[in-house]
Amino acid sequence: MKKILAILIVISSILISCKEEKKYTDYNENDFYEVQGLVTHAPLTDDPYDLHVAKDVHYKYFLDRDQPLSGIEENFEILEDVKGYPVVILVHIEDEMINFYDRIGFSENLSIDEKKILEEHFQEQMDIEREKINKRN
Image 1: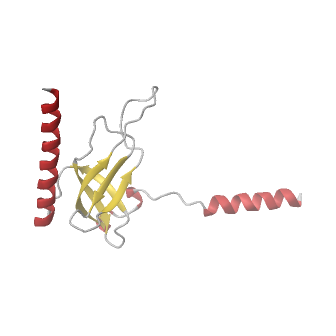
Image 2: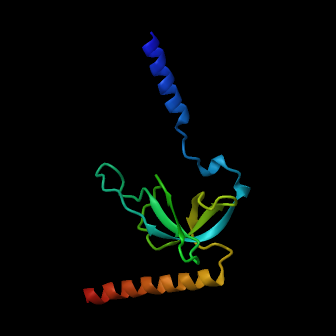
Image 3: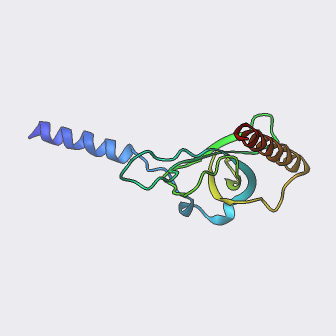
């Protein structure tokens, strides 16, 4: 009986200590501000019984910093390859490591440096596509 009680106490303490990662809805929306980001990786599933969709969207944000920060939106389904797409990221006011993917597009408060970085990024993407087309022809 004592062994069973001890095992139950250990299991209970383990379950209590395991915290579920907070979601955006667990916070107050006023605790976040928008920053510009770019999708760096959005691998498609290769499960033949699943839709061929991206499940995890990896992105970088604070693009104008020497070392932009990285984030990931897990279990997210999107039906196209979004690598390189501009995205809006919501960042917590008190802890910039707390972040969430908001939407594809541009932040309303882009800095001049961010605009320049995005222009360079899109030029690189266009050059890559042009190169692919030239190789096919």
